[in-house]
Length: 143
Image 1 (tube, rainbow, N blue to C red):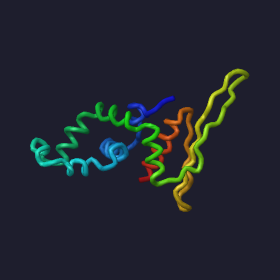
Image 2 (image 1 turned 90 degrees about the vertical axis):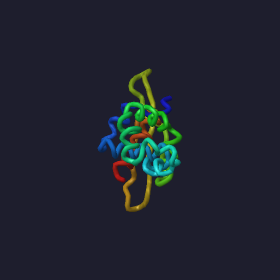
Image 3 (image 1 turned 135 degrees about the vertical axis):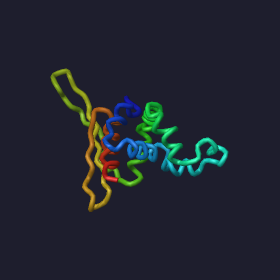
Image 4 (image 1 turned 60 degrees about the vertical axis):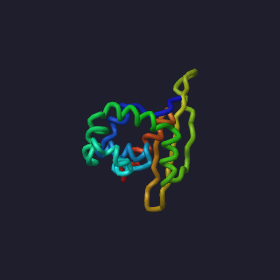
């Protein structure tokens, strides 16, 4: 069973690249990148005097490393926790799919409910991890 999303899945996330970095950073680190920078002690900021300088040099210019580190953090547990903070899981189960006489597989179905003014979010995939990522992408595009 796949445990976390891939680097390719993060790269496919269709937002402006800096906005994508910030959204992913907030999920995996529980705070914005700017809040993290502001919490650094002064001695850490000697060589990186501004937030923008830190962002460019430690996140944006090291994009490959950032994607790898953050994709590992976006595991099943983290995505369930993130989705559960604002949404209620109405359904999360697995359905057996029969393709032929001796060929079958499974598909995960996820339904999330926020409130009556917000439509139910549906996501599905063969892997639970990918179904959760599909649901999370829908929510991130709304925010």
